[in-house]
Length: 68
Ligand SMILES: [Zn+2]
Ligand SMILES: [Zn+2]
Ligand SMILES: [Zn+2]
Image (cartoon, rainbow, N blue to C red; front, side, top):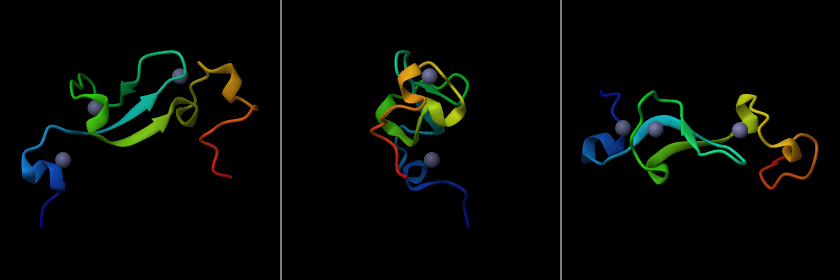
């Protein structure tokens, strides 16, 4: 039994943190000092999902990410 994910076992560059996508700011990772590229994150979040309000449009208006 192991806590390593498939990418860990394969020795791939990846990150276990969540990449938070901001509307107007750079995407940032929940892992301090994360240096892996955006595309290798297993988890992606809209910043509105973590209480960020950098996008005034997303608060109440149409969102392409809305799932219901
Ligand atoms: Zn891993
Ligand atoms: Zn934001
Ligand atoms: Zn990361």
